[in-house]
Image (cartoon, rainbow, N blue to C red):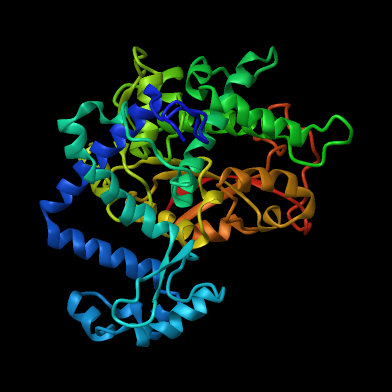
Length: 451
């Protein structure tokens, strides 16, 4: 591949958009690494706590009683130093396809060691490890080179075929779904019967967003058959309007001074809606997403005290980043988790919701969208599921009892389906299935409060 050829994301290797995103991520990751060095022991404790909590319900975690480990000394006693022969039975079970053995997320690949100390050894590598550990260090390591040789990103050596790691593509794919959402909002804005208006969506969706939308439309509205898939354009329009109204109502509530969008994606509510004085509006997302968005909205001023927090919610210490941006967990807040929960494993969904609950004052509000479990497996959903899986961002989690899920984590919520009163706006084209009916696809708009 030459530097002028097009990558999977539609950009050439030296395209200014790609270079800007890459540069922003490099320096953001180095800044986070430097911040960790100011309190290395504390950071290590947080990372250990994160790993223990995430993997507590694995076979290995249960065998070593991870839930009772609180300190490094506890860890040393519970998990003494072991050689490969001791770990090999666990690794072989994971390699054979068993889930939840060593890690809560399934290994994406098994690296093989050189065998310099004996036979070749299998090393499980998970997407979460690549995202939280490998890639942050990988990107941060480029910072000195880019500082001293700024042109290196526009005059790189030629990458070779196959050099793009599949895990990188997975992470980038989830980010690109934000461009699909922007394209959907741009299309809605052009409709004469639109139920909201987003004047910035066209700029935010770029060239990739409309291409993704065209693929969705082709699968959803076949020319030679009746529609069997849910109408993504109508769903997205209703979701956007529903959460527009929800956030505006929350912002008018006495004492409500904090709104948090996580992930922010290509959302433009801080720019297109009016907000009351004194409100702090936080957008949390990965550095590359926020850098792209800032570039696309250059010269546009937000209508509120708008603060960006360049961090991923799977980071072990995103709370510190949000607090540094001015967030006060002792004050009421409103959280919106839009277009997130079905892209992450069930364990991460529980962990994120628990951490949001722990970082929210009683009475704080929360809203999210979620699919039911059947939506992930029903045969007639395959046309839509295969598109997202083909993009590298499969739907991973759904539940038929969203109220119970949120209740177990400290929230009292209500779940509405598109088409029900308050979640229709005259646009939902399908019958609304009763909650007792099984083997049907559902989407839920969830909203409620921290107890």
